[in-house]
Length: 58
Image (cartoon, rainbow, N blue to C red; front, side, top):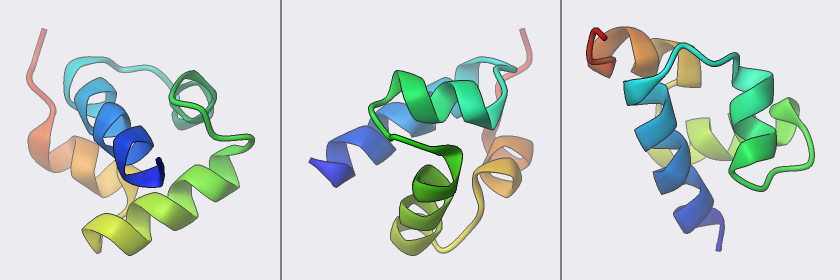
């Protein structure tokens, strides 16, 4: 379940400029802190760093 939420977060990070707080809630985490924790654990990078590396310009 967490893996699916992280995967959904990857897509949103790549395709939008939505704040991390909004993304966390939209993919099913109770707080941005929890999202950041699980994201970093799964990907070995922070959501912000991932976005900088992989965001597709609009």
